[in-house]
Length: 181
Image (tube, rainbow, N blue to C red; front, top):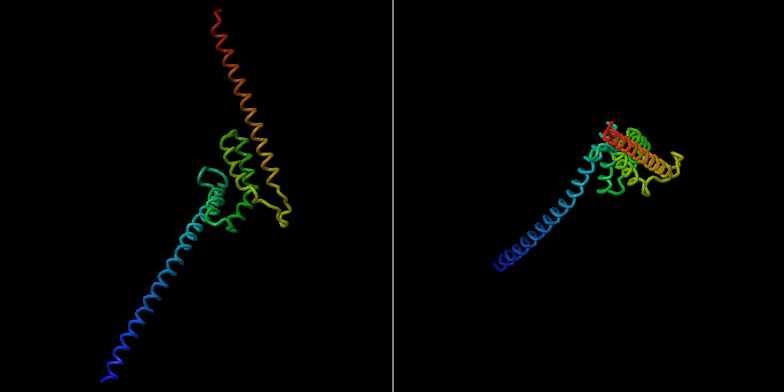
């Protein structure tokens, strides 16, 4: 009888210990499952942004329109993951064609849009476009951006001069109209 009482009391102890182990294991599993799911959400957002950026590049939307261009999408990816190799490589590869896009925008006379696009290129250039022996370009973006900035400034001066000439012509016409004949 005594052996039966000892077995029953030990059985409760074993069952209690087993229950504690099961609860601890379940808690550990739940904590790890939640921690593993969190980066997946960021990866999903990054994948979506990379997809949008790829579509924008395919459509030729490197720096325009506002909010729906490859550079802005890649910048968003880099906010999630500053060392994202895909975004950095694509920005580097798109830099020269984007510079040509900015030059065309300046040539069409849309100087405010050109200024915004040039600011995107400058935002990328800050320490990112470094020497790459495979491309034999050392800081080539520095002179491109300087040339684009100078071109934009020259176009702004020409535009101001044209506006001043137009204002003078309008003023001269008004003076001629006011003089009685």
